[in-house]
Structures are given as structure tokens and as C-alpha cells.
Length: 278
Ligand SMILES: Cc1ncc(C[n+]2csc(CCOP(=O)(O)OP(=O)(O)O)c2C)c(N)n1
Image (cartoon, rainbow, N blue to C red; front, side):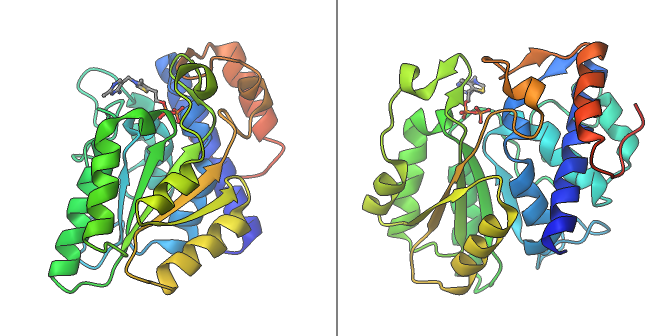
């Protein structure tokens, strides 16, 4: 995909996030929207996968450690044909095929997450296993900035460096907010790129909404392996891509009444694409 196609794909992911969360009446929209550009690059350009065979042995793996951003992952997977788009209408309902947090029973989801801090450890285990087997594919993991408050994250960070997991690329969605406020007010983590470097990782900082910057940084990390895991800090905005959501100060998990859904879709419709019928 070229950059324009990736940007359109990101827009389609956002539209489906809005439609799916809107059908449910509310949900984790802020942290879903902040990773849509990353997901468009990963699923549009970088990752090897087969929607017909989600467990394909040669695939790249993706663990969304901030499991509450599942609406964005599911939207990307539906658009890529892992399951019918209509499944998005049953997001987070009793008996659903799409639970509110990333769930391994969903085609294309590699790990069940939601209890923050655990996904990076799971990604380390997958990456280590692949190395032992001499396999060459990559393991991608998405963590949240609030999630980096968790102690288990730092255990996993030490493990990944110790075992030279250079097939592991972790994204840190630095959207500056967590569940109940700004990082600066809840837990100041300082210079995270420097912290990961001090743990023995490569680290990069990019504009998390610039698809070309994201794409080039991932390509470099995949190509220039040096025995270290890589962390890519994505400078993002919580609610990115839809100004009326960005402007809500606490947009972590909000009600999404029909009026707001229409406003969001109105903004997104300025860009052409395909969407779950609303
Ligand atoms: C172990 C654990 N503690 C608390 C929660 C509740 N929780 C859900 S989302 C969240 C905030 C996460 O913030 P961040 O990682 O920055 O996510 P984002 O802002 O990107 O959505 C919290 C505390 C949880 N899911 N797991």
C-alpha cells in the first residue's frame, strides 16, 4: 500500500471503531483511535498474515497488550477479511464473538489481554520461542503509556534484553493520558525512550500519526537487527483523527450516543472509504 492508501485504511479503521462502539452505546474510544495509524501501517504494509489461515506458522505476531483497544484491532482484522464486518456490531455484548478486550478466540488475535502489563511478557515468550526454533518472523507488541506504570512491563523489558530478542518490536502509545487523568498527574515516567535504552533496547521516537515515519522506523528495526529488542515510542493524541473526541478531556471510556456517532462519522466521511453499515 502507498501512504495515501494507508491513510485511507486508517480512516476506515476509525469509522468502524466509531460504528462498533456506537452500537454498544460506549466504550474505549480514546486509546483505540490513537493506534489506528499504527495498525494501518502494520496490517496494510508490514505484517505477514493470511486471513484464510490466521494460525499460519510463518505469520508475524501482534500482541495488543493494552487489550482495551480491541475495537481498533478488530476493525483492522475485519477490514482485512479475518471475519465478517457484521461481527463488529456485537462488540462487547453477552455471548459475543468479539469480547471487549482482545481475545485469542477471535481469528487473527494472538493473545488474550486486558490485565495491563501482561502482554509484553507474552510477546517475549513468543519471540523467544521463535528464536529457539530458528524462525525469522517478527513479534509486534502494543503497550500504553499508562500501562508502563506496571512493574511486570519492566520485568519483561529486562528479559527481552537479556535474551537478545531482536525479533521483538514494542510500540509505546504515548498519548499522555491514562484511565483517570494525564500521566503527568498520575505517574511521571520521565524519558521512556532513554529508560528502554538503559535496559538494553534500541529505542526510537516518532510521530504516531505520520504513516511514513512509522513505516520507515519499523522497516529499519526489522532490517537492522543488532541483538537488541526495539521500542518505538509513538507520540500520539488520545482520540486522534476525530476532533470532537480529541476535545473531550477524559475520553478513555465514554458513552457514544447516536448524536456523537453522527458527528464523528461526519468528520470521517470527508475521506472516502468503506464502513460497517450504521
Ligand atoms: C492490571 C490492570 N489494572 C487496571 C486496569 C484498568 N485499566 C484499564 S485501561 C487503564 C488505563 C491504561 O492507560 P494507557 O495504557 O495509557 O491506555 P490508553 O490511554 O492508551 O488507552 C486502566 C488502569 C487494567 N485493565 N489492568
